[in-house]
Length: 428
Image 1: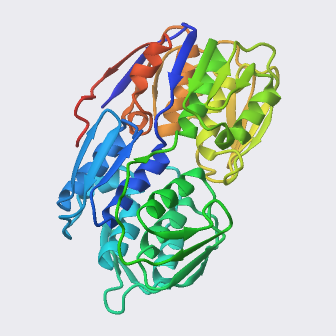
Image 2: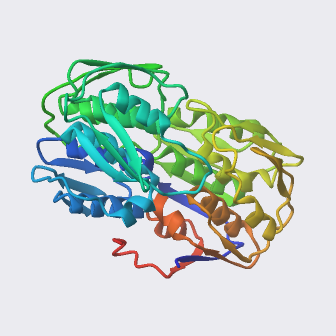
Image 3: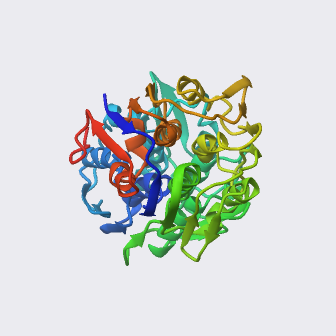
């Protein structure tokens, strides 16, 4: 089991450069198999999820090479093959192979995906979209079979019952090579969706409306990469380092950010009184003094991101008074609370999805467990703030989602080491 060991009490300072967006990358890689040419990406985060996705690609005879943020994928020799269940179950975003394989071959067989345990995250809206496009979907023994080979995929009008990032992207991947026009209503608007649409459009797709309530797709016969696609910066990674800098920093500059993607988050930091200077592609966070409590409610983009409610929690410990977090996306996303309490934090959840955070004068290092990616990020920040040593067990969750986290934290002055994982070869 991977462990992150942090000796706390050292203020962070300096600068950190944000990597490519994890939530874009895990959709772009499956989307690459729709191309009839090799595909190249840069600004790809060096995270465990990328290695797992490469492992899945290799099972389909898709060759890939990843080095120093540059990823090349050659799907020209792709063949249909069973996908490795272990890798599929290691990350939920593997479900994007449903839409990608459906778009490429007209059918897909995928083990039900795994990933973070955040409570119920059904894929009924994905299935609704696939069926509207003409596919037959069946499930047997935790394996999902999707087949449209009899009549082919046909464009359709699809109104999602709930706003879903995963369903929006999966339907785009399936519809981009379907016959005719597809109109998807009540779609998610996240920047990562715009990133996927940009990538596909640059290969010849016809996708309009990404970032709005309605996306229109006219199917095309072929997709061919003409240039390297640069993954957008990771707004969740940026927000995590901003929280760390505000909570226990002596001046930190976060580089390679798109401030517009973080407006709901930065507005809360401003409300708290965080010393912040926002540039065109960077944000400076100064030392914090006299912070105020705030009320936060997670919402679909452009609202406050669910992925940032946990990383902001340690910062709320510094506010004089009680802060409230209402988690509307994943009410069960509270598994960091018990671990933070073990470190001495005054934080609780009495009702599903409602978190109370009070001023916590002193955190003390101990052994805790990262239940999922963002819970782990909260524990890392708390560990840096704490007196003494903190051991974070099950740290592979953190490595799944944060680009070169050990290197970046050490660069800011954190006393950290990682045990139990080979960071050079993360392939399962």
